[in-house]
Length: 105
Image (spheres, rainbow, N blue to C red):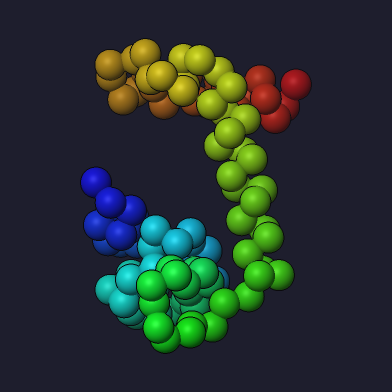
């Protein structure tokens, strides 16, 4: 599933936010309009094929790196990266344990 299609479901659960970061996979008019309808500003770099230059702040985009590092750190656990668990509740428990081990200890 392309990122821009999955974004519709993800953006339904967004709470109050002033700024929403996304990578180039989310650079579509529909995604931008949905973010703005929620009252937030999209900070998404433009695709190479896009003619219109949008408002994009590389300085603010650097904070997205912390989120990427967090997911990569969780994927160091083989059980999380390969999703051994069949049930969502067991997978959620494994993610919670991995996060506790990674960030608390």
